[in-house]
Image (cartoon, rainbow, N blue to C red):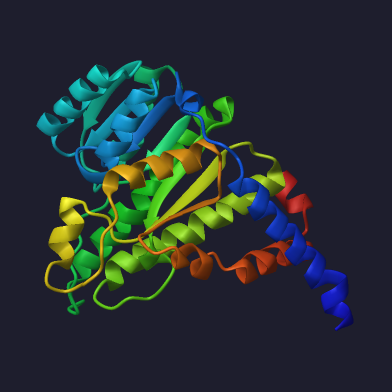
Length: 292
């Protein structure tokens, strides 16, 4: 009881105060005006909608996906919507060399980088058959490993701009669901990796924010095809979802939850985990952070 009064209650109060005041921060579209932004997986769905929102806000955007013809249309419409500039680079994130080279090319097109939005995924299936190890490997490589490659390649530019990394993830990366094991594994990996990096940046005073976006079912064509006849859940609109991701990134929030149910964020945010992560830092030799 004494331990609770001395340690846990004050820490809980700090976290509750943090979330209260963070929620009251106001987003303004001009926060993105003139910002240099990369959006992956931008030929359709949430990625395309994010590119269009950024264009309306006057950002410079570079989009990427596999389909060159579709990307041309996204760039053209982005310019019509008011983007300060818009470019595309077509390629597949199954190729880690392309992923690394893409960041360098995008940086040259933009003249730097303020925000890296990681949104792409490989084709996902809802199935109970997992004997195809190539499917599992491809899910991990595209949905997770390429995100690491892209963020590492972008970090020098983001350090210069005090920029942001935005990681589009899923509720499947916070809770277990049947029929999505390879996809879920890749999304849990994103949480583990980028949440750990967030803590390292905090300790080492690296002023690059990381925003992990936990999404429910969104009404993209890809998602609707994947869950057809299997999942009976009301999807949320991709246009609004894309805007909420951008808002959270601009406000440098650690996590963004978007779902048709208001209970989702309350149940998944897990303040207990955050308190334990905070307390665990006292066991570290901080000199190791400064020497690395």
